[in-house]
Image (cartoon, rainbow, N blue to C red; front, side, top):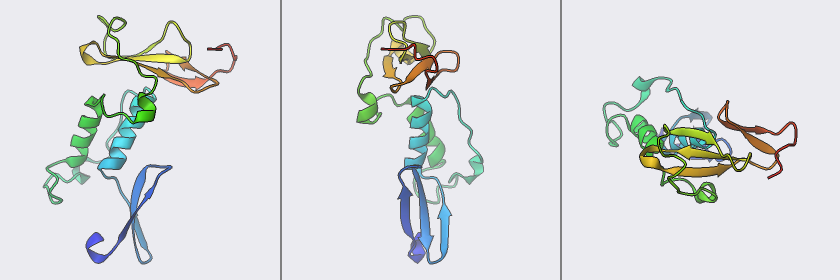
Length: 153
């Protein structure tokens, strides 16, 4: 469609691209939208994702971005702790004592009910914050509304 003059658009709220050509439009994924989805997973403590159809990735390198560019983007984004957006890095602190001998994953911050700690590989520690009115649910590994209003930190 691009070769025929389609225009690329991006819905920032949904973090997805789409193309428009005349009265035709098509939504699709690209490296940017895939990175955003992985970022969303990481910031919400979601421990998995599903790829609908790996055979729809460019396994033959038709687009000259290498074989399986979407899968490689997912893998790189999952491993990348340095490429968080600045607004997400604020409040994340590196420290390794808490994570000593812990498996990679999310943990409750024992000093603050609104905080959570992510222990990465090589004893990396990142502390994140739930929004006001929310608290960390260590069972679900995500922020949730503080129904009891007991989290005052």
